[in-house]
Length: 73
Image (cartoon, rainbow, N blue to C red; front, side, top):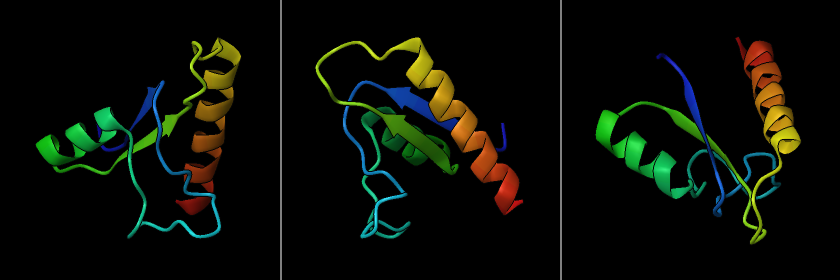
């Protein structure tokens, strides 16, 4: 796949945060492993709340990512 995104129940920086950019962003564990193994730009979305991620939150995150990618293309 030319683009991929992981959805994980652990911590990562959000690219939308004011002080975060592509140079200092910390990725989630699976995204970091995939980026280093396959040398692809793997994005990530994560929540670290100590509870399972709700399906609705996953759908919202995926749709938001697709909209961002659509605007940048």
